[in-house]
Image (cartoon, rainbow, N blue to C red; front, top):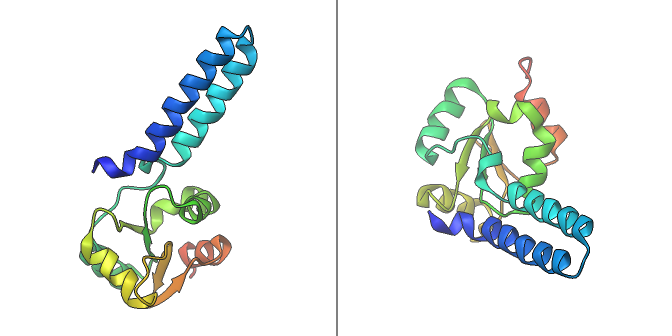
Length: 145
Protein backbone atom coordinates (compact mmCIF):
# COMPACT_ATOMS: atom_id res chain seq x y z
CA UNK A 1 0.00 0.00 0.00
CA UNK A 2 2.75 2.45 0.90
CA UNK A 3 4.59 1.84 -2.39
CA UNK A 4 1.95 3.78 -4.35
CA UNK A 5 2.66 6.89 -2.28
CA UNK A 6 6.48 6.91 -2.50
CA UNK A 7 6.77 8.99 -5.69
CA UNK A 8 4.12 11.57 -4.72
CA UNK A 9 5.69 11.94 -1.27
CA UNK A 10 9.15 12.38 -2.81
CA UNK A 11 7.82 15.14 -5.06
CA UNK A 12 6.12 16.89 -2.14
CA UNK A 13 9.16 16.67 0.17
CA UNK A 14 11.58 17.73 -2.57
CA UNK A 15 9.32 20.67 -3.40
CA UNK A 16 9.23 21.73 0.23
CA UNK A 17 13.04 21.59 0.51
CA UNK A 18 13.51 23.53 -2.73
CA UNK A 19 10.92 26.12 -1.70
CA UNK A 20 12.50 26.61 1.74
CA UNK A 21 15.91 26.99 0.11
CA UNK A 22 14.62 29.57 -2.35
CA UNK A 23 12.83 31.50 0.39
CA UNK A 24 15.98 31.44 2.55
CA UNK A 25 17.93 32.90 -0.40
CA UNK A 26 15.47 35.77 -0.63
CA UNK A 27 13.33 34.49 -3.51
CA UNK A 28 9.93 33.80 -1.95
CA UNK A 29 8.00 34.09 -5.23
CA UNK A 30 10.20 31.57 -7.05
CA UNK A 31 10.06 29.30 -4.00
CA UNK A 32 6.27 29.40 -3.96
CA UNK A 33 6.05 28.75 -7.70
CA UNK A 34 8.41 25.78 -7.46
CA UNK A 35 6.48 24.41 -4.48
CA UNK A 36 3.24 24.60 -6.47
CA UNK A 37 4.89 22.82 -9.43
CA UNK A 38 6.24 20.05 -7.21
CA UNK A 39 2.85 19.62 -5.53
CA UNK A 40 1.22 19.43 -8.96
CA UNK A 41 3.65 16.66 -9.92
CA UNK A 42 2.89 14.90 -6.65
CA UNK A 43 -0.85 15.03 -7.27
CA UNK A 44 -0.51 13.81 -10.86
CA UNK A 45 1.49 10.82 -9.66
CA UNK A 46 -0.80 9.97 -6.78
CA UNK A 47 -3.43 7.26 -7.00
CA UNK A 48 -6.03 9.88 -6.07
CA UNK A 49 -6.49 11.08 -9.67
CA UNK A 50 -7.57 7.61 -10.76
CA UNK A 51 -11.03 6.17 -10.20
CA UNK A 52 -11.30 3.62 -7.41
CA UNK A 53 -9.63 0.38 -8.39
CA UNK A 54 -11.40 -2.95 -8.24
CA UNK A 55 -10.07 -6.49 -8.50
CA UNK A 56 -9.22 -7.97 -11.89
CA UNK A 57 -11.88 -10.61 -11.34
CA UNK A 58 -14.57 -8.01 -10.62
CA UNK A 59 -13.42 -5.78 -13.50
CA UNK A 60 -13.56 -8.71 -15.92
CA UNK A 61 -17.05 -9.60 -14.75
CA UNK A 62 -18.28 -6.01 -15.05
CA UNK A 63 -16.54 -5.46 -18.40
CA UNK A 64 -18.17 -8.58 -19.84
CA UNK A 65 -21.58 -7.48 -18.57
CA UNK A 66 -21.54 -3.85 -19.71
CA UNK A 67 -18.93 -3.89 -22.52
CA UNK A 68 -16.87 -1.11 -20.97
CA UNK A 69 -13.06 -1.18 -21.12
CA UNK A 70 -11.00 -2.63 -18.28
CA UNK A 71 -7.88 -0.53 -17.69
CA UNK A 72 -4.88 -2.07 -15.94
CA UNK A 73 -2.64 0.65 -14.50
CA UNK A 74 -0.13 1.44 -11.76
CA UNK A 75 0.64 4.64 -9.84
CA UNK A 76 3.49 6.76 -11.14
CA UNK A 77 3.17 5.49 -14.72
CA UNK A 78 3.34 8.51 -17.06
CA UNK A 79 1.44 6.65 -19.78
CA UNK A 80 -1.34 5.81 -17.32
CA UNK A 81 -1.51 9.47 -16.31
CA UNK A 82 -1.69 10.44 -19.99
CA UNK A 83 -4.58 8.01 -20.51
CA UNK A 84 -6.38 9.13 -17.35
CA UNK A 85 -6.13 12.82 -18.26
CA UNK A 86 -7.05 12.09 -21.87
CA UNK A 87 -10.24 10.33 -20.80
CA UNK A 88 -11.35 13.25 -18.65
CA UNK A 89 -14.63 12.72 -16.85
CA UNK A 90 -15.32 9.61 -18.91
CA UNK A 91 -12.55 7.77 -17.05
CA UNK A 92 -15.02 6.89 -14.30
CA UNK A 93 -16.98 4.78 -16.80
CA UNK A 94 -14.06 2.38 -17.30
CA UNK A 95 -13.15 -0.36 -14.84
CA UNK A 96 -9.71 0.33 -13.32
CA UNK A 97 -7.38 -2.31 -11.88
CA UNK A 98 -4.23 -1.24 -10.03
CA UNK A 99 -1.71 -3.99 -10.81
CA UNK A 100 0.33 -3.13 -7.70
CA UNK A 101 -2.64 -3.99 -5.51
CA UNK A 102 -3.97 -6.94 -7.48
CA UNK A 103 -1.61 -9.84 -8.29
CA UNK A 104 -4.22 -11.37 -10.61
CA UNK A 105 -4.32 -8.10 -12.57
CA UNK A 106 -0.52 -8.01 -12.80
CA UNK A 107 -0.55 -11.59 -14.08
CA UNK A 108 -3.15 -10.72 -16.73
CA UNK A 109 -0.97 -7.85 -17.95
CA UNK A 110 2.16 -10.03 -18.04
CA UNK A 111 0.28 -12.72 -19.95
CA UNK A 112 -0.47 -10.39 -22.86
CA UNK A 113 2.77 -8.36 -22.83
CA UNK A 114 5.46 -11.06 -23.15
CA UNK A 115 5.98 -11.23 -19.40
CA UNK A 116 6.26 -7.46 -18.91
CA UNK A 117 3.97 -5.40 -16.71
CA UNK A 118 3.42 -2.82 -19.43
CA UNK A 119 0.65 -0.42 -18.52
CA UNK A 120 -1.78 0.91 -19.35
CA UNK A 121 -3.14 -2.26 -20.84
CA UNK A 122 -6.78 -1.92 -21.79
CA UNK A 123 -9.07 -4.87 -22.41
CA UNK A 124 -12.06 -4.20 -24.65
CA UNK A 125 -14.29 -7.13 -25.51
CA UNK A 126 -11.69 -9.50 -24.08
CA UNK A 127 -8.95 -8.22 -26.42
CA UNK A 128 -5.89 -6.50 -24.94
CA UNK A 129 -4.56 -3.16 -26.18
CA UNK A 130 -1.26 -1.97 -24.73
CA UNK A 131 -0.86 1.80 -24.26
CA UNK A 132 -3.77 2.72 -26.55
CA UNK A 133 -4.50 6.25 -27.67
CA UNK A 134 -6.80 8.02 -25.16
CA UNK A 135 -9.13 9.10 -27.99
CA UNK A 136 -9.58 5.46 -29.02
CA UNK A 137 -10.44 4.43 -25.43
CA UNK A 138 -12.77 7.43 -25.10
CA UNK A 139 -14.68 6.17 -28.16
CA UNK A 140 -15.11 2.81 -26.44
CA UNK A 141 -16.54 4.57 -23.40
CA UNK A 142 -19.18 6.49 -25.32
CA UNK A 143 -22.76 5.33 -24.77
CA UNK A 144 -23.15 4.45 -28.46
CA UNK A 145 -20.02 2.26 -28.57
